Length: 277
Length: 311
Image 1: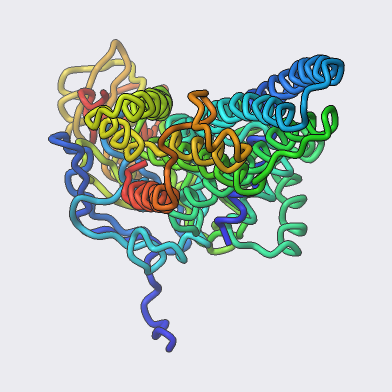
Image 2: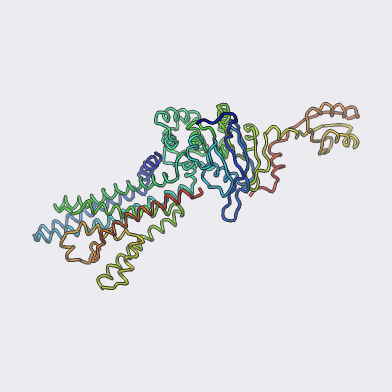
């Protein structure tokens, strides 16, 4: 089926692009630095002989910090590689020899989405697994809720991918990039506003925060992922760190995010089917 | 249920096909037929709506009005495109693929089986003379090479109908000859070729029928032969030219022009030429030469379309 042909092509194309390799090398450089940092922290802790409970918290915090960076890298890489997949091919005319083949328009969009989705899942696994692996190798501490946490990070990537694909059906590459990063930024700021609002018990700011996470669930998904991977103590204390929150998104939010992805993708399929090329 | 094979189905049929972008009319009223096995030339000035018309036929653009049929199926039908090849004017492809990979990709998009692709791809690479470059990435290809691989791509699934949009624009004479040969072979296999071209000399050599389009409308559609018939200009070099002789020449044709001892006139039929020669001699003219020249397609183009056409 044409969808799989396009998906494989998209995956291979993404793998061949410099920007992906830049994201990969950057990620690896980060892991190396992170590993060095973790090593020295671990050595210091071992020397001081802190109680096990305390060290677990520290290592968990370390892991969360690392995953926070990975989260950011995943978003960057997803948007930057997918932003011009449709817009660029339409503008250059490459799309003409493809869309005139005996296949339906939606197969092209779906194939691209699947190709990038696979690439993104791989990147999350590699990078997220890398951080967690480094911590485990150097300290023996295993991060809990790993599967759920990484799964949610991947879902977060998919929300941005779906927006980028939808944008690409109608907008230029530049406009599409602005849209995707703009929404991400909105969600990011909204997340902090909600955080502060709930601390101050200010309902309006909390609502603003909720609205922003409805527009773009990325931040909410990160918060939930962090929640899943945190140590129980941090959760109970409800620390104000970037990696924990006083108001953790619930399961309904996750379902909303899944529906969000589905709707964005469906809109993209429809829009591209009607568009004049 | 099989159709009665009585009438050979047209490869392309359009009835008042129309496309409007906002308030701009790109194609006003496109009505034409292209029979199967024909090499059809689509001529017109820039901005006349040629590319938009082709895009409507290929399903890239949705018509605003009217209807069209491609190989018997309504325009936009997906299955019909399995037997349609297309070489776009600006032939841009995924340039990180090698020539070979590119053809295999498009074979897959055509729904061809692996076995058949393995048979067709090397054959086509050879046909367009790119076998030595099979493992080179397209980004290292010259314009001419890209056009050739684009042509190969269009021929992958042995199409019944092939659209060539300016297929020789980037090619050297060797390449142009190649395209001409390919078109000739396609025709001998019964395929239909729809050619959008500005290179009128090429169209003259390869096409059976042409249509002239201007401002989104077909203004003339005819077999090439009929168009240039009845348009023979004759050049005579005559000594002892007198005004009476010149005036008398008008009985055999029109547009009599004198230029020193050269006289030009346009005749509708070659058969009158011996009579013209005899008459000139009888009138006392010294006939040094009589040279008929068929009207070129370029002259015809300018005549039909006018010189105000292009955008």
